[in-house]
Length: 410
Image 1: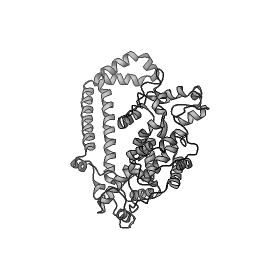
Image 2 (image 1 turned 90 degrees about the vertical axis):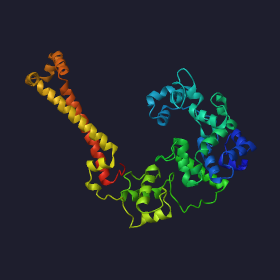
Image 3 (image 1 turned 60 degrees about the vertical axis):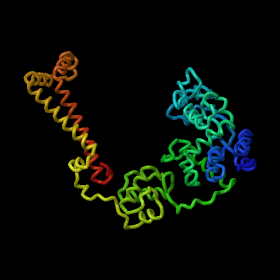
C-alpha cells in the first residue's frame, strides 16, 4: 500500500498525474496484479526505479532537449562529436529521430518518419523503442504502438512498467544486494553485467530512501548465500580464491555472473559438495579451508593432440583435418610447380636481376599478371601455408588450455 504522504516524501516535486495513479485503487490493484502488493522488497525496488528513471516523477517523456553540444556528445559519444552535435542543440525531434531511428524496431532512420521521437523514453521506467512497447502491448493488452499518445499517460503506462519490472522479481526479492542486478536488467537488459547500471549512485540513493520511508522488509534468511546476480567485495574475494585454485582465469569483477557460477560448480564437484552453483555455508567453508582441492591436472600437463583426439575434441579434429588438407594441397601445388620449373625459374631470375622492383612492376605489369595467372600454384602454396599456420595456432591454444586446466571440455 502506497499513501500520498509517503510518495511526497520520496518525490516532493512529483507530477500530480503520477501521485494520483500510484495512490489510487487502480494503482494498488495493478501493483498486486504484477506481484508487488504484499512484497516490500519488490515495492521498494519499483519505487526506486521509478524515481530514478522519471527524475523524481517530474517528467512524462524523455525530453531530448539539450542546450549544449558537449552534453549531447557526452550522452552519445559513439554517435556524436561536439562539432557534429551542434546542429542538434535545442532540436529534440531531430535528435531523437537520429539517435533512436532505425533501431529497437523503429522503422527508418528518422528522415521520413518520427518513430525515433514518437517512441522515445516514456513515463515510469522510460520505456523506449517500438519493440519494447510491442512486447508490453502483448503482455498487457494495451495498444501502445498504435496510440503514441498513451506514452504520455502514467495511467496507461503503469502496467507496462510493472510488467517490465516483474521480470526481475528474483533479484528484487534479495533486497539491496539484488537491486544492482535488477537495475542492470532494466537498464542494460542483462542483470549479470559486470558494469554498474547507468546512474547507479542515484538509483541506490533512491532505493535506500525508499527503505527508510516505506519500511524495511524482514531480512531474507538464506545463510548469506551468494549466487548469480550478487555483487560486491565478497564476490570479488571468492572469485580471486577460485582463480588461485585454478577453476577460472577470468579477472575478479565483483559481479556473480555465469563464469563465476561455472567455476563454483566445478569446485563443488571436485570437493564433494552439493553442486548448485551457489556459495552457501558449506561451499564457503570449503573455499576458505586450506585443504580446498585445486582443479586437478593429473597427467594433463603431458597430454597433447593424440589424447584430445581420443577424447573427441571437435576443435583438434577440425584443425587437424585442416592441416592435413593444407599439406596435401601444398604438396600437389609444389609438384605441379616442379613440372613447370623450366619456365618458372628463368622468370624469377629475371625479376630478381632488376635493379628497381618498382620499375619492374611498372614496366612489366602485363607480363607479371600473365605470369602469375599462369602460375597459380605459387599463390596456392602461400594460401594453404597460411591456412596450415592458422589451424596450428588454434590447435596449440586448445592443447595449452587443456594442459593447464582452463578448458576441461572435449
